[in-house]
Image (cartoon, rainbow, N blue to C red; front, side, top):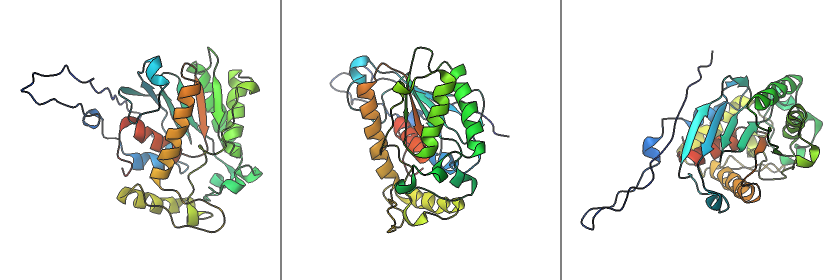
Length: 276
């Protein structure tokens, strides 16, 4: 049984400037972080029970319209009431939910599928189990009041992510005009030569990540990118900067086809080393 824990990350703002003779003290975001291992969260991209988490960041409207800074100056984290298979939930900036899509047909076969060429194919869509997972997730979002005052849904165009978004929209009464497809920033992390291998081979990629966040998986010539954790961090940061500019005062549900996008973004938000 999965144990749900609660973490809180609330670094202090910088103190008043000390007298000239004293040495200014710089607040350290990392020192107040509870020890959460990104490696553990990334490995939950395999079909294992996941926990639902929430994040909130305290920012002024003026700050929200600037470029996203990692980590933000103030962040708190709370766990959602219950776990669901194959999902992550996050809320931060007091209005952004991040959702991992339900199980895909490839997932159900235990096969790695990250080639963007196939992201809109039927085989990249939700499995029957994935559809049920998404309905449960959509109902929990509704219970959390995610779209009580209207919201936008921003899914990757990867088939499983877009299908998950459609289910979330239907359950939460969101019009299609409030669904905005994302074409590249939310692509599943490209795993290069691991494409088509068994899901358990992902552990080899994460072992390399633990050495350096800039190590890429071996390349392949079928069009599958080979992205490092640092590569993913760049694009999810760009995505959040765009959303923060366009929807700074709105609720946005972001639907990702994989866990790496979400856990790497989480690591950036709380200031964790991407190698962890």
